[in-house]
Amino acid sequence: MEQITRILVIRFSSIGDIVLTTPVVRALKTQLSGQVTIDYLCKKQYAAIVESNPHIDEVITIEKSVSEVADLLRNNSYDYVVDLHHNLRSQRGKQAAKSLSFTLDKRNIAKWLYVRSKRITKPIGHIVERSFNCIAPLGIKDDGKGLDYLIPDSAVVSLNSLPEGFRSGFVAYAIGGQTDGKILPEPKIKELLGMIEMPVILLGGPEDKERGDRLASEATIFNACGMFNLNQSASLVNQCLVLITHDTGLMHIGAALKKKVISLWFATTPELGMSPWLPGEGSEIIEAESKNRPTSKLGNKGYGQEVFNIDLERVASAVN
Image: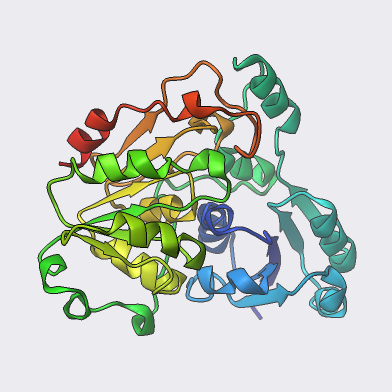
């Protein structure tokens, strides 16, 4: 009987972070000898990100606590646990599984030094590279194919369902962000939209809808914030000509779909290790012109309006 290697990959949240684990999942599935079974442990609200991934056999979800699935993890008899979250909750997952584990180095000290000094004094590295470093003892290497994001057929948005002016090509703009320091202020977004020569669809969650309504005052701007679930939004990203995005989950989905991604950076910086990984041709990273960056690891404190001093003409030129 062929040997079966059972692996548990842990990443609880959030959208972009989970998408960034997919190269490791694919490499584990395809590079280890024999039959490989991979389970993925995440929060229930993020399960849709990986449910269609062909390299994942089962998605195990929790609402809040690992105790909800501790017996299942223990009984599954994993050979390896790959902890790509590295927090107290994932530690409890490893303890429940009682298997040989490999854990991501989050480089928090290096990030803290960088935030304080605004200089890279210790290398941080991209999170995908660090994820592969943690499983190096297994002989697994990055295959260079980038991120994975599979859109189920049921989530594909027909262009015929969009207003007529958006059916022959459009730019998608992901206007949201987990913290205000990652979001271009509304007046600047409005100015940028006025410089883009193609129809624009605004993407985001329900929390972005009111802002989207205020921005969609022109006939060539369609506010889709809150109208679609994550996979449907990904479908629109997959069909767009260019994706403009803040440092947010749709940025990584756009990279996974090999779209031209124009990513805008304010209170955070790409050097923190979360830049788009192998996006499509013509992609650009455009950063604000401020010496006070990064203001914090998450872009949630310590920033003023100077971190939003970005060259809008350069952004528009990259899009047009």
